[in-house]
Amino acid sequence: MTNTLATLQRLLDGPWRHAAASRAACRDNAWEAFQCEQMPTPGWHRPLLRRSYEQCLERAVSLVSGPVDVVLDIIPIWVADTHETEGSADDYWFRGHAVRVGPFGKGESGPMLDDADPAVDVRYRCEAVQWTVGNIVHSRSYAPSIELELRHAVYGVLPGDVLELNAVETVNGDPLPRPTIGVPPFCSWVEPRVTGLARAVVDELRALSITTDDEGNLVDRTRP
Image 1 (tube, helix red, strand yellow):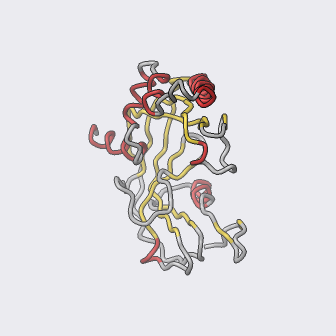
Image 2 (cartoon, helix red, strand yellow):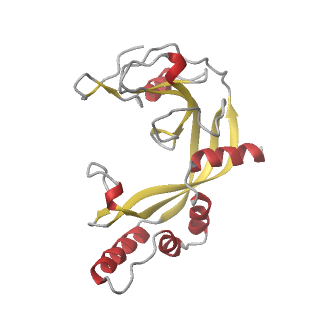
């Protein structure tokens, strides 16, 4: 079970190479030092930029709260991200995961061009602790449509969560084969990858799908 816990923690961490350090900073109540290490302070010769940074640092640290105990669900899903042409099952459906602490979200950032690594084929229910945090970011990396806690010309503050798994158990269910559903162009569709899910959960997973019409407007996904 120790190996399973480590695999699932890597799944939640994703490609962020500082994930382990972020958990340590939360445990040690050292978020300010962690932020300064990840986003170095501007030099004194740039006072306006430094003042902006200090304001962002103050806001980022003020967002830190926790830990709180949470129950987390990890459910295998199929994800299809298409491009200019309609995708077939063989070309576009890949193994991914849905993660739920409250509402569902995709465990991997898109587009999915291959199976997730690591990928699991079993549904898990996990016990974890969660911290709410703020991260100093470069504002230019986040479109205006993305809500930041604070947005300056150079720096901003992105709210987020840090999760640390403590225990895990499997939930009954059998793997489902790759879907045979064709996906329209410029869409991202989701299907469950295991059996045993309540109909409401299946609907929640499919609601993660993104569908556009011929003019690029978001529309409801058609069934199947």
